[in-house]
Image 1 (tube, rainbow, N blue to C red):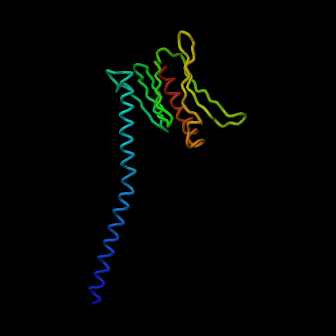
Image 2 (spheres, rainbow, N blue to C red; image 1 turned 90 degrees about the horizontal axis):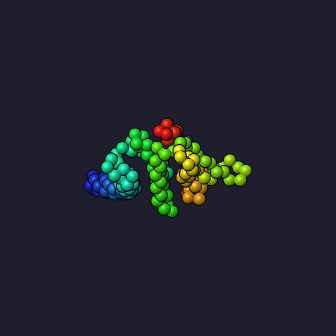
Length: 168
């Protein structure tokens, strides 16, 4: 009698462990599925934007990086630059032909007398007319995480400023 009772307890434990394992697998699998699906959609969207500005050879954009729903890509050979901002408000895409640009710098806007950055813009100066082209990169109002991502975006913008300046 005790042997059959012990076997019955083992079967119940095996079933419980199996159910717990299945629940944990589902909890892990659902976010991975949605992340992969979102990543594939973004890659498709980025490729479509690249095709818009270089229909014959979108792969010539030799450097592409994404961070915090922003994607920057550059074609160093043909001197083309695209900034894509997929924020919650709207998708924005800005193209700059770097052949027509003489310089680029970052414009930081701070709040009042503090050092808190509320806006980061890329400013391009054209060759012929010295016209300023300002491209918004970071805006505090569009940022859900606030001061955490401003630091990351500022570092990302500085990195890309150097890449753009090397290409000009």
